[in-house]
Amino acid sequence: MKNKIKIFLIVIIYSFPVYSDDYDRINIKTIAENCNGCHGYNGDGVGIKKSFSIRNKNYEYFINKMTEYRMKKNGNIMNRLVSVLSEEDIIGLANYYYPKN
Amino acid sequence: MSSRRNFIKYILSGIIGFPLLKGIRANYKPKVVVIGGGFGGSTVIKYLEKYIEKLDLILIEKKKNFYTCPFSNYVIGGFRDINQNKFSYHNMIKRGVNVVFDNVKYIDSENKKIQLNNIKISYDWLVLSPGIGFKWDSIIGFNKKDSIKYPIAWSGGQDSSMLFKKINSLEDNSKLIIVPPDYPYRCPPAPYERACLIAHFLKKKKRKFKIIILDKKDSFTKKELFLSVWKKLYPNSIEWIPRSKGGIVNEFNSKENYVVLKSGQKVFGDFFNLIPDQKASDLIFSSRLSSQEWCQINPVTFALKNHSNIHVIGDSINAWDMPKSAFSAYSQAKVCAENLKNIIFENKIEAPVFLNTCYSLAAENYGFSISSWYRTNSEKNRIVSLGSKSSPTNASNAERAREARESYDWYSSITQELYS
Ligand SMILES: Cc1cc2nc3c(=O)[nH]c(=O)nc-3n(C[C@H](O)[C@H](O)[C@H](O)COP(=O)(O)OP(=O)(O)OC[C@H]3O[C@@H](n4cnc5c(N)ncnc54)[C@H](O)[C@@H]3O)c2cc1C
Image (cartoon, rainbow over all chains, first blue to last red):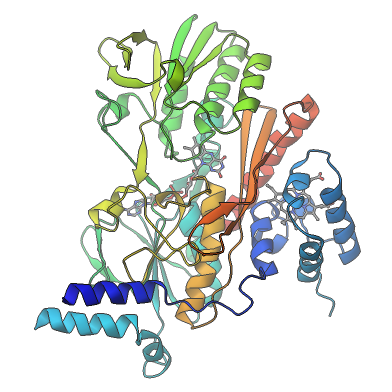
């Protein structure tokens, strides 16, 4: 009996998290943090590869470059990664990396 | 009586634990212990470090240095020194993380205690990223002891150097046998990348050789790319025998140097790299945390099923569509860290997005990759791929050379983020 209650409680705890109201709207930060894998912590570029920084450009350059990756089928890695993102994601990412204020 | 007390304690910790942390225990820093300082564990640490003022953060790792599996095939291919794959925890310690070097024998999840070699450590929240374990019964005649003489080289480190030494000492006209594991296993393209890089080395050395891959599977990741590359770079030197053509290996005879196929046929060789089937890390089973081969988790929080306050990431979990890779472990770890923090501080849980990219080299300057984004399904009970995309099969040599260089950029980026 006790075990049953325990299992019941475990189930409650397991499903305890409260999801945010706009859960289905992906947080841009969670997309951006995956970019760090190749572009360094915060997208800052790492070590000798400063050229790999996403942050050392500007808002317009970022939008243009990402749009180009999204539209062109030139078969490079960014091309393949960005083809899944929406225009809205790209603008969201641009605001994330280059906050307006 | 004592079990009743435990039971009450259990309810308190599970349900009204949060108000307790916030209210009466206002100055209390929740103790988060991470076990395993590989790709998954080190990423959780990195992304929880921001909250070090509010969390008591501890990493437990059994080895003083971490040797990465990524790029260990480059060591086997003879164009990378093993020490280039070695990382220490010095900088993590400098960043303020409490690192304990010890072997975890088991976790007492009922009492929230971790048994190390000599002492016990308690936790409020536990994150596990302990990697894989082997199913030692998957090839008769090949067990843990045999793997010293016949290195598997599936955990980074000196094994890879030993394998390279063996390859370097092969005579002309040698026959090499590679036996990849069955799904699911750590790094799906790695056995086939390994075949390429061994071929690359022997070809450079102007040796005549034949590599035979005896496979339990009828397909593998980036198969079209690998098959076309084998034809182009190593014609008639690499032969892949799939399951449907009799590739299943049942037995290994180390005295007489042959493997026995399911059909009973013996295949003799001068070199063997046998990679057993895999399961979650031994630690999961010594702690009775899973009755299945891989940990079952909640894909949004990585909470372990049927256990409170334990989260598992990386190779030890069933991550549905996501392959077992360093990039996957790294991507899962960030979501786990974010949502664990949200649980501890009673914030709203965020929807996850995951990414994986695996680069493979077929020669020193010849690379290609596969990547995919992932989300959870609408029921939030599994991770689903949004579609994998690989490098084109008809890419030019220049493009392959560029992807090979990019693999180094990825490697230096991820390792510097975690270990510098
Ligand atoms: C040949 C090869 C090539 C690969 N190439 C790539 C690649 O190019 N790209 C890629 O993304 N992935 C690659 N991988 C896969 C990658 O290595 C793994 O998927 C990744 O390491 C998984 O991370 P993890 O945190 O789950 O485990 P690990 O990185 O293995 O970390 C586990 C850690 O836990 C520690 N540990 C285990 N048990 C205990 C215990 N009881 N007590 C204390 N500490 C413990 C271990 O010492 C280890 O440091 C490759 C794998 C192989 C074999």
